[in-house]
Length: 434
Image 1 (cartoon, rainbow, N blue to C red):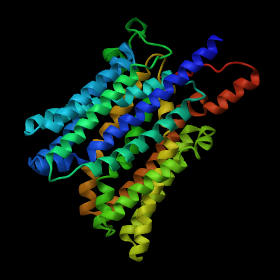
Image 2: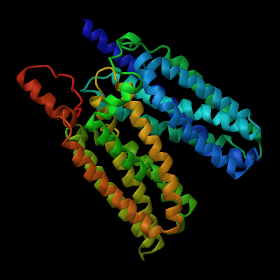
Image 3: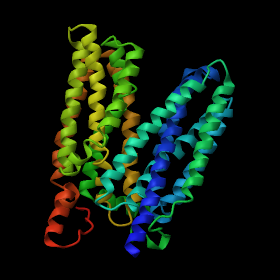
């Protein structure tokens, strides 16, 4: 009976966590696409300040994420998430009221830091409220709801804003702040199955000892390198290099670019659970390697769109298919990467490992546009060939990572099947450390 009650409690907590993921993504999609226009044009602060605001978002995330992991380990993910939500709400509200450059930058830093910390906190809550058998499905649901929240938030936000009225943007940011505060109230109702306390943290799990331990985990270091290449070569190009390449080299209109982004989201929504069972039964390293091949095909389609000699209709179809293929790869990665990070983390250190991986993602998302945008605009041919090579590099790095993983980490479905066949219980995987 106790086991049934624990399972029910975990299910109830997971449902609230999924609602939290959707609401946090909704808040992000609600305002971020319109930040540049708001700062540069509506507030009249110019392109330089607007660009600085976007940079501050990335810098704030890079600063707070190393400390977020330590806090999650020591205090638990829920208190850290609540603090991040309050910080993000204050940042959003002050951003909507800010009139000067200094106030805008400080507000953007608060909003960016809060949103960055939400990711590892929510991911750690998913780990704590799921088992090895249910974790892939839980993270697939998280990714599905995040994309849904981003899309709905962007759609509604776009209909509310009016560049001729500052008050419309003030309302936009006020609603975002209210969403974060509503989410904070909802999260206070979550009852985590195991509420970590400071004294429960393993020895060496705080400060420099935690980072030394993580860096000594050979498989985790390889996964971080792989993650950087993944995010740099895909997510880091979506709204910068690839869009610039489409407009400059392929002659794609802005409306077609919107269609391509919609195709990406549609493929994720349709394919997410269709590919889940297939992905769950395969080696994680080989799934990631397959994603690299799919993305290489996507970059080849982009090359045809911009460098081929077909009709404009063919170029448009090839460019839209590029985004669609990226979406298929993303759907395969969502139930693979995050559970792998969780399985590599020693007991009690999931927050530290989630924060480290989120830090790698932020670095890639900061470097990706800075490299891809100018390269795509100036040298479209070398740009698309370079990232095709990066995609194939993902496959090579994934296969190499597979050799550093245990069977339970790389192929958990097979490991569980063997245990069940012997009549035993699956043991928690231990991270391979050098």
